[in-house]
Image (cartoon, rainbow, N blue to C red; front, side):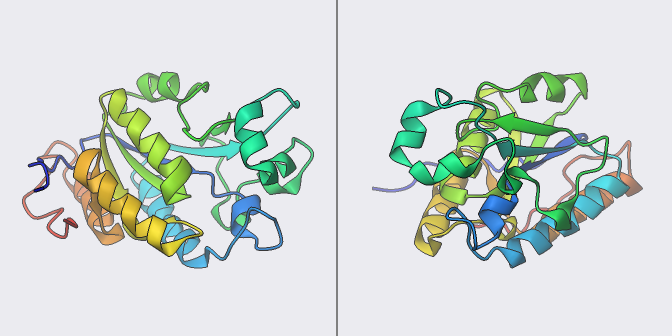
Length: 217
């Protein structure tokens, strides 16, 4: 069966960067949820520098469970999630990506950064027209956030190197599915080039020819 035809959409004039769950609990192998994600953190750091330089919106998410009833079924299925409590270091954003005061940290209890949170309202308040979604993990919270973002009618780009998963096969398979149905999966450099273009031509074309030439298929 052949793949569906699709149209690459790219980014708009005011994209936001959504950094999904790059928290100590997921980037520190000492945590039962964690694994080595140094390369992903480094790539996200590059994107943060670009978005901050262009004065574009940035949002972080973390997972926090305030009582035993929150996301009960999800936590029963994955008991390791129970370490993500308000008094735990594991819910903190990885210190290498320290959020600035103007960059909200969205607390969530389920996979998507949209579900049950204030994220959509904040995107509307800041006149965001498209999303760059990065973070952990590709097969879980990143994918769920991408799907929900699409369902709110946002064009979405996912720079593949800036996402990660405990399972490399799951990472690759989910990037393939995301690109097939929900978002443009591109390289980090493609996004950096686009942000630079926006900074140099604030009134110009939002998607210059060739800016996403390395789209994965």
